Image (cartoon, rainbow, N blue to C red):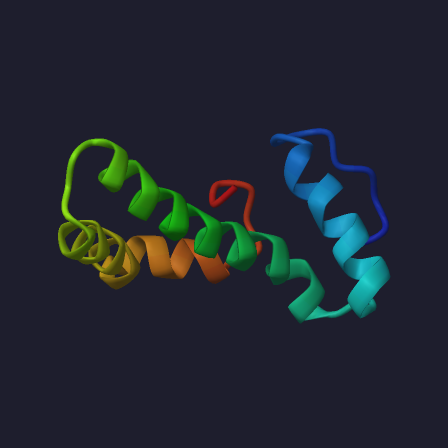
Length: 85
């Protein structure tokens, strides 16, 4: 992190940023990509979880769309922080 080793926070975020930076180069997009991708995965998993809990397809879609509309989830999913993953 800025040329120094960083030993705090969960390491998973940095493990996911590594391959992303190898694929996309060292830039802001590559740093944010894992959190954004997993935010999209979270939305899809919420849809299937709602279906498994007995919701109709429309109800599951409303639940997934509602999670996308939550401001905090949206901001955290595009931030390059350890909290989103």
